Image 1 (tube, rainbow, N blue to C red):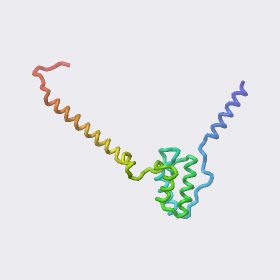
Image 2: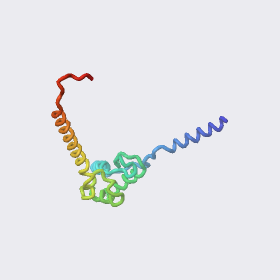
Image 3: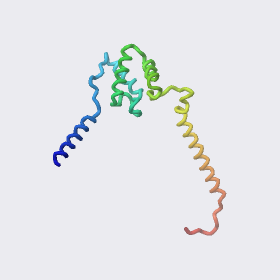
Image 4: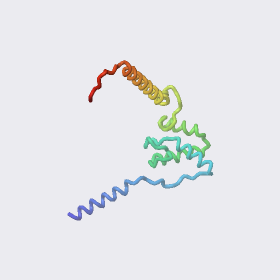
Length: 147
C-alpha cells in the first residue's frame, strides 16, 4: 500500500516538474543597443496571440518566444516597424495590435467607450433633473411626520 502511494507521489512530482513554463533556449542577439531598444518598443506594442492580454514582450508562451524571434529576424532583414506590424496583421489579424488602426470597421472599438460614457452622463443628468423637479413640486405638509 505504501509503495502505491510512493509511486503516485513520484508520478505527481514528475508531472508537476514538466508543467513548468518552457524557458527560451537561446537568448536573442541584437546587433547594437539601438536595435534592442527598437525591438523592445515594438514587442510592447504587439499582443501575444495565445495570452490575449499580455504584450509580446511580457508573455512567456512558446508562441511568444517564436514571434519575438520572428520580429527580430524581420528587423534584421531591414523591414520597418510598419512592415513588421503589417506582416503580423496579415498572419494573425488585427488582434495582434494593441492599437488597431482607425477604420470604419474599428470605429466602435475606438469611439464606443466615449459614446457609452456620454450616454451614461446624459442618463445621469436626466435622472437628477427629474428628481429635482419632483422634489420641488412635492409640498411638505404643515404637521410633522414621525418615521
